[in-house]
Image 1: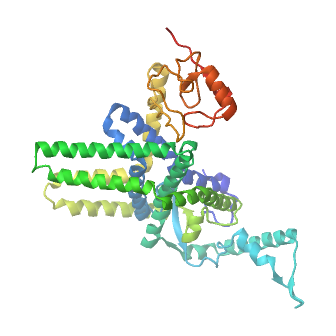
Image 2 (image 1 turned 60 degrees about the vertical axis):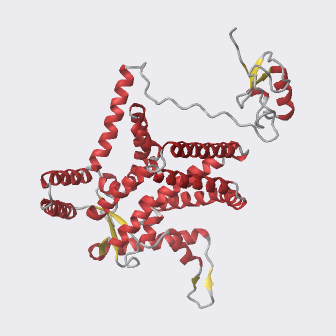
Image 3 (image 1 turned 120 degrees about the horizontal axis):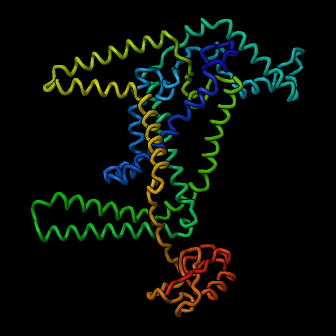
Length: 455
């Protein structure tokens, strides 16, 4: 399994680049797979729709529990333990040369004092690179000669390290995903034209009217028992009114504009940092695979036989202590097997989770091959109709009339926005203005389509 890393002479416990890459991408690959499973299940059972609607919150809540369990009892995250890796914290990072990255080496070599005392020497780029590579080789030689001393200096991660690791493993990816989703939504051309915001305001107004109607209906029927429900609905109405007010606030609009301009650069820097660290780890210029590991001063090493045996002892002691704790409870015959099952699920989740995804995908493939006519994907919801832009043409109440000439349509033609016009009317308008006359969405004559109607 580790044959491609045998030439790594200075530290045989250092994980290879491919091990680090696989463990880093393991949990992000599970997220869309599990979401697809719950989306399919929600088509059969509507109770799963709540999980689909709040999937990010459900996923990262379970991930928080899972990562906490593995960090506490296995010295590594879920994916790290799957690949038999553990987290260690070197006591003296500069003694073994692991803290040197390519940037720190180059920075120390840009200006070097000369031996003649005439000031700093000036090196060319090739000389700087040669000296940096020589320095790296000297650091590796010193590290290989004191490998046993380095192992003695390494310590296990503490509770503070586990809490900080949970921030990097769960909270930051959650907020990063939410920011990406918000940016994608707000940078949509429909949002820039103000069509999606008007749709949201219409939804808020509809919810307010619905809650007010429910309050009035309950007050006419019963005046005493539903007072608490009415208070909750009144609170919801106040929150919806506050949301409607905030959406029209000029300050929030200014902040949103700044966010849409600045966030792409922040996201690019975030991704570039990960790429640079992974590249440096690939060429063994650093032992930190991500900047988060560097911030925490934490490295990943392979588990040895001693670590595996200690994990087994800790797990057996933990299970025994938990069972003894609930043994004196009333209804112990129920709680003892329950605690045992929950412990087993958490401990063996690194096998259960990949296996369940594989089985589901295999069953889906089997039924799709044998029942081609059966739908395998959920039916997508139809898109919401485009809203009329401020200053756009009025939409006739009679659907047979053309909005441009306000006469019965001849040679009906659909525009990119979804509205139907007479072909001569819409062709001339789009050819001149290059937009839809109702929504002002950009379009061209090539996007016009003939509609064939049956009489």
